[in-house]
Image 1 (cartoon, rainbow, N blue to C red):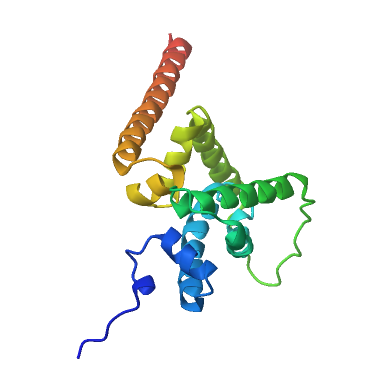
Image 2: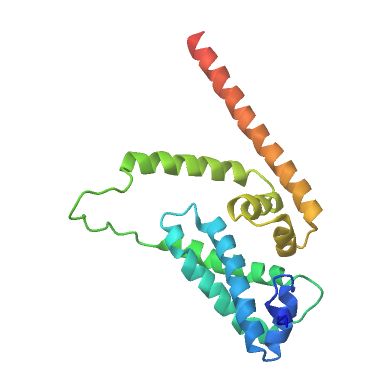
Length: 206
């Protein structure tokens, strides 16, 4: 006999349906919900903190804070037709903002010198990497906020068009169109920079 799988353990079940079951006291649904929420939160948090020094080390903690906050807010959640991912996204955005403020005011002390050979990147390598990251961030900052968020979720966080759409309240088709427009805009920025660079080089050699 084929074992019948519980409906709320199947991936195709909407998060808001799991939230409704969890709110009614279904422990299995709650476990499934938080497991999937953590996966969504982890990818989103990573996409927002990866540019910060030490940000990668905080991703797990911030994602866990999102799960705790979602759990605490379940009793107040009301299904109004929007995807539950948008609810999670809103909480995650606030937790990320808190973490970013903490980075801004943190007193970064100098770590102890290692006993053995230090295999970490050299200061020069870190400077180059930081410069490259800041250049990318600078280009992204020139995009409208909605397009910037779509690229973070699709490219950095690795979310599907469907997942991104649920988080931002868009259709998957609209996400793909916006992503295409954002990437074309970024290519235009890069092409303009390259053209300016060639122009400056020609002036120096002229």
